[in-house]
Image 1 (spheres, rainbow, N blue to C red):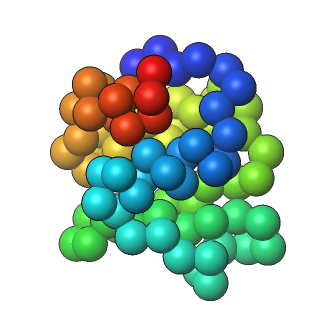
Image 2: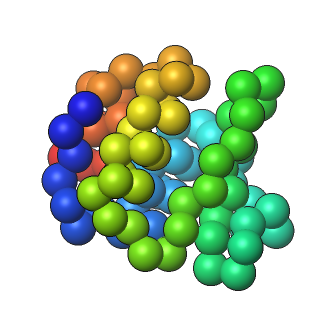
Image 3: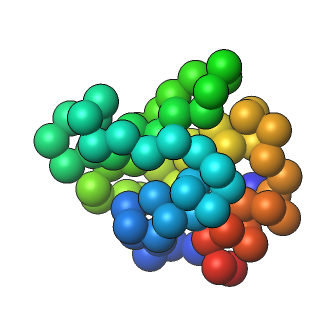
Length: 77
């Protein structure tokens, strides 16, 4: 999955909310935000995001059953 660089933590959080995932600021570390997919696990979104993190987040959402099209639509790309 190819994602553009420059995606921010705020944009990822917004996309995860659009996909119906639970967002928690209590489970993360400092500026990190925790995203929870009921029954499938959790991941964190750090404040500073690079290309590798974009790829990891996209892959995690796909593992949770979201299609590339759904992810891109939620991100607004």
